[in-house]
Amino acid sequence: MKTSGGNNRVHCRPQEDTIRETTQDLKQRKEELSQVNERLVGDQRELLRQQRLAVLGKLVATMAHKIGTPLTAISGHLQLLLEDSQLSPEVQQRVRIIFQQTHRLNTVMQDLLNFARTPTLSLEPVSIPQCLDQAMQLFLPILEKQGIQLKTHYVSSLPLSSADFPQIQEAFNNLIDNAIDAMPDGGHLTVSAWPQHGPGTLDHEPGICIEIRDTGTGIPPELLESIFQPFFTTKGLGEGTGLGLAIASEIVQQHNGKLTAQSDVGNGTNFLMWLPSWTERT
Image (tube, helix red, strand yellow):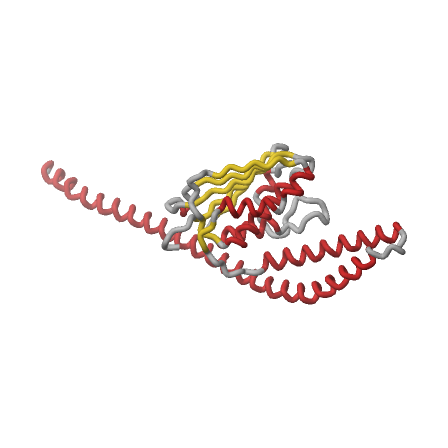
């Protein structure tokens, strides 16, 4: 009887092993199915977002045509009025205010167009230092006027990036402009670039990391996650459209890159951008 019982235990072990392996296999398949479902949900959300952007693009294009043309005419007449020496100083000041607000409306319309359109990228080997230097040339008078010290640091062995030069320069422009706005009383703007493997699922690909750091007012933690959302702004009423960072983020995503931000209230904000480098298969 003892021998028989021992034989039964011996026969049970293979069955237990089979059950254990089957359970592990089912668990693994369940995890894989969950990951597939998450990717599917993400793809569906992205598709809906693209559809909304397409509708928004058509709407904005119509608005830009119907509103932009009369705004341009109004601006032209206001400029002529400002040159009229017969106007009293009080009237000239009122006309100047109207002209400034009209110019702001034109800027808002242009920002809307830039955000809503989905341009076809023309990827080419791009020198990131050259692109950054050209972008910063536009802001040198403002940097000097506001007492902002500019520092740049580019690693000498930096590879070329796979990018659309005008589009990625627009992203740089928006980030630099945001940094300047955060330092109305002066400060330091540091722009750096170095080779670095990509974030997340791109960590096997060579790329370039660009850092734009300011010593401005900083962004509260509860607002940091919202800064790349369209129309979100921490600026005062009439001081911003809330589209600059959203446009920069959209451009970087189109380049299969990544844009993140870190901030410390009172000490400044640090934007980190990762872009893929140029390869022959690009």
